[in-house]
Length: 164
Image (cartoon, rainbow, N blue to C red):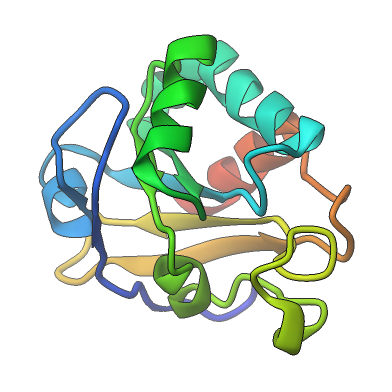
């Protein structure tokens, strides 16, 4: 990403570790970077794998003073099931309206079908730099298909590129 832009504020229910509700402002108090993983569907194998891999790379993120935050466009009950099944070490936010995803320009393949996983939202990642006076979106990855999730290596490389 070439140009930074202000990071949209959010406050969403959290079914994982951390504050509930969870906001960007609260995360910014303790973290230098917030890595937002915008999943497109709770039933998507690749979305589940991405959330689990972010959990697996928790130590690598913490070493960079960063925290992963999964954002799931579903209801609380489904998100709680995810947390129970995957035991994620990072926040898992509930965004049933997709408002945070929209605010962060999560791609939508066919806007008229945005609520249908196979036609609607696409995966996205945003690295928010919270070190300045106002949080900024410093790096993004926007999927081109429902299967286009960046590897955690790509995400960590993106994070490293904005840390200096």
